[in-house]
Image (cartoon, rainbow, N blue to C red; front, side, top):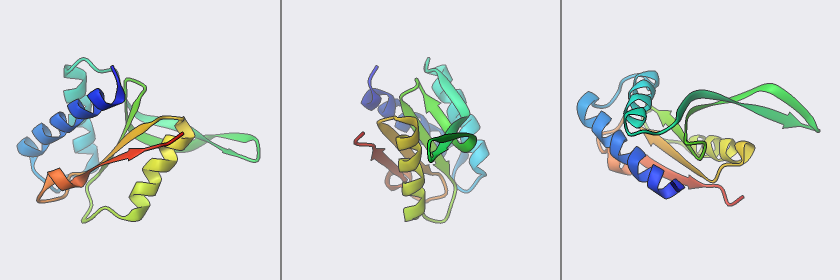
Length: 125
């Protein structure tokens, strides 16, 4: 399965969760629900995946944590904030680059219109 197919299913699961739970809950609540929904769809989903940080050829084990990694291909970064900021986009792009992944989804559940709060970010490797 390719990244775009996975992304489509992630979006569908996201809308299902949003319609059930509504906006404004903690990010961990949405992360848990999305993890569950994606596993029910048959995906291999990992939560809070550590990414090492490399600096001057030194690899530091404690670097960053991805919210969700789906089928080892798509990173999902979940937010529940007033509005997505440029720093949130940069954060996900950094995760994509450090993990050598191509596609990530930045999802903000704290919104009145979820459709405009799911952002695809592509790492042009």
